[in-house]
Image (cartoon, rainbow, N blue to C red; front, side):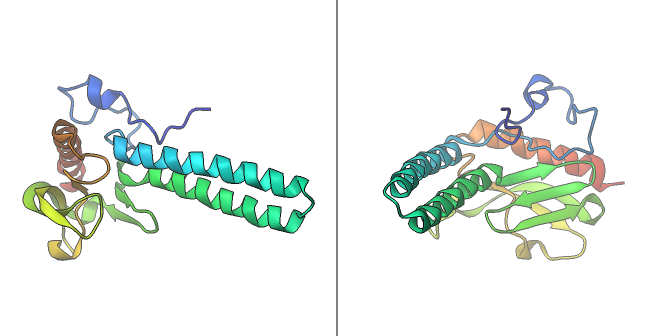
Length: 184
């Protein structure tokens, strides 16, 4: 079963000379691949879910169906969390920019975007409270102050930790989408 949210479209990497290499620009796309930290955490979650599902089967075979149902529900919760973790990130389309978080998704139309730019600033390390100096892709909006918006991408999040070239490609791609659609 193909999981389209796991891989970015190959056209971003294949067409270096074309900033927006897609024919169908109305489809939401992530302009980069999920990082190894994000994929690893999701894989560990799915591994844990497999053990919990096995425990649910053992509990069901011992005769406690109610307890097996609770454990099965817990396994489904772990699977849903792992899949949501894989969907997290920045998605772009002709309609706007979407920042998918674990619990919250923010969508901004291109008509509200002034620009997207890379800045040097303190960023959170893997989303934890600890901050380190790094780069962040920030969105400037017409209707809000830039300080109100969290950064779209950082060099120290789960997708780009120790992958500076991947961060540069992803930031350039999002900046190209903002430049193309933000001015219209």
